[in-house]
Length: 366
Image 1 (tube, rainbow, N blue to C red):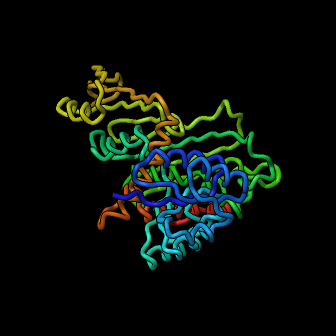
Image 2 (image 1 turned 90 degrees about the horizontal axis):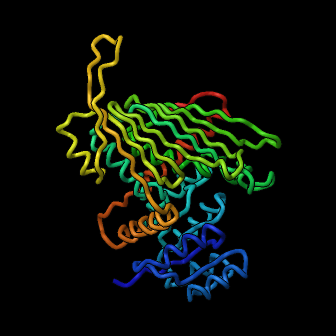
Image 3 (image 1 turned 180 degrees about the vertical axis):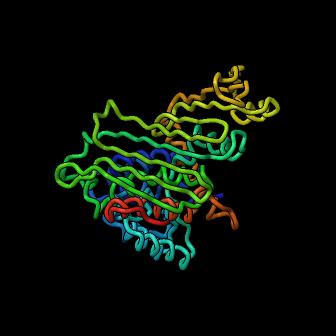
């Protein structure tokens, strides 16, 4: 099948990284590029043997463009995506979906009216250790999810005080600009609707919210706690996601995780199923009954650690898998992408409500 024509909107640092990922695909071909910097778009056009356009309107007028990718700052996402939708182009959109709920509603509505596909680039759904974690949770081998804790501590060294990241009218704030990835992932892990959201924040000089947290209650009874901080040296950046289930715990390390620790207690008859799911051997220990606890019994504790050698390659592959899903949604009637537009909307809404809770000073029913 002929590859679909790809038009790239935004060729900054991340736009360049994603373009290199797309260039390795057979399902799409980069045919057009636009960027606010003439030197960047001309260089990219030469590199990918594509057309360089001075603005988005010229790119959207190119009949060879079937899909546009939007890798621009958050406040530009909705106006640029709406232009693409009205031009009949499908959209691969970097997060966030929008910066306000009104804009998110408008985007979803426009996509339905014009019959185009939109996919938000939620890479975490496609990275290997998180796909394994999702499969483990959905298998119910360790029971239902009861609690999730996300700690994401990041650097502010490249974010000068006037950077748009700190301007919530343009970025939406940390939850919307960054945290939506983890709201989406946790929504999938819990498989239940959030019912109550409570946010809080630390405000640094100049009104910059550099540390935020959100506690979310789900209809299933599961609880989740999200903490994001952009206030540390780069050498101290760390992301840890802990998922507590009824009979075990899984802990992932890294923004694009390169390690996943799993431990739990399950019937020996379930060992083969867990071994098959994880594709690794299990470390099994017999644990004596804890002393002093009436009714406690001895049991088998299962543990294993999964690792990945190259998180950058996992990142690029995840981008390609997301784009592949979008292509299939376009070419195969009835196909449902791993990341649906409704998924993107629900995670954005949770991020938006978390920020609203901070600003209003009280919990919000979801």
